[in-house]
Length: 179
Length: 179
DNA sequence: TCCTTCATGTAACTAGTTACATGATTAT
DNA sequence: ATAATCATGTAACTAGTTACATGAAGGA
Image 1 (cartoon, rainbow over the protein chains, first blue to last red):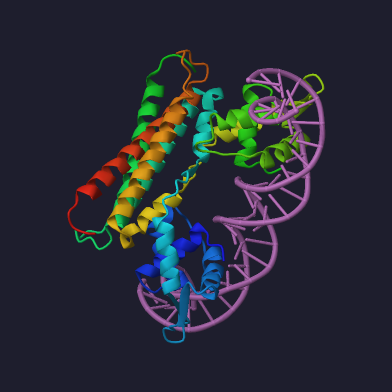
Image 2: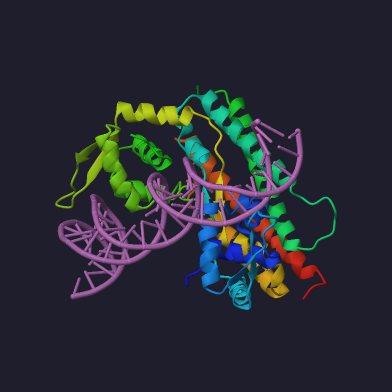
């Protein structure tokens, strides 16, 4: 079976503790979302496939009469996960930004629209940064240092972006030429 | 007809000057690639669709017996493009980074592997930044200021990332605890 | 001669999203 | 009551990539 990065995300999550598909989605939304989104449409079918491949083991764990299936990493799954993490093949970071595409072509529109766009972008990144900052655990204990490092990366990145676009907007507003 | 962001990328490109699908690909690879990739598999069918929708006008412009179809923006296309750029609806930036996903889960692997990964990532961003820097025009004339701003954004972003991962790797290497 | 670049295209595939359906539990 | 949350799932769709095919022109 060919595992995708999303498969490894699932393996990595159940490695932290046994989880349901719902748990994984919650966890991912609160951690990996800013650089790797996932949806239920991937999670549930993929968990089934991983179980079939012997990478995770499913166990019924209903709460009352509300069904719930916990998934636990197997030795095979753990091995596959470790191998994947250890393989440091360089892969490119993929970025897609509609607003940046607009900014790229915005020479043809009026100055005010251009500035407004840059300011919106600055705001977007400020919001993203503060959203991530809210995820930071209040206590200074560090059970999983790298998760915290990655979170701080996200905060720093969006803060940098916010600053860039703020400065850009200010600079554009300060220029006298162009209408 | 429902236009996608990729459609607008094509419109934006042919707005600069009439272009063939091949030209667009070259242009995009040398400019928008770092935040909006495109492939021939999208370009050619989409150009046909845009022509049918009256957004671009195709004209045969063979060089010798080597075929070539130039596409020119129509008034309808120009209007659609301007409207799209002017609409400053806030859309999220999409990021996908396999290596960052590995780093996120790398608490379970050895310290050396973790550091190696961070260094690889630093290198990746250094390379990306210098690749973009090579795109910078040598002459200081600015026909399309925003294109240059977006390029500088890319350079700055990757430089920031490179610095982050370098510092992270150094910090991890400096720590005494953990094996 | 042969490799690279110019140039256009398509078919098959992969990944991922959206929208929906179902139903139990808990909080307001 | 009823809204929100917990929980699982699927079908249809969309976007995008990959791999291939074709062929001419130009340079080594």
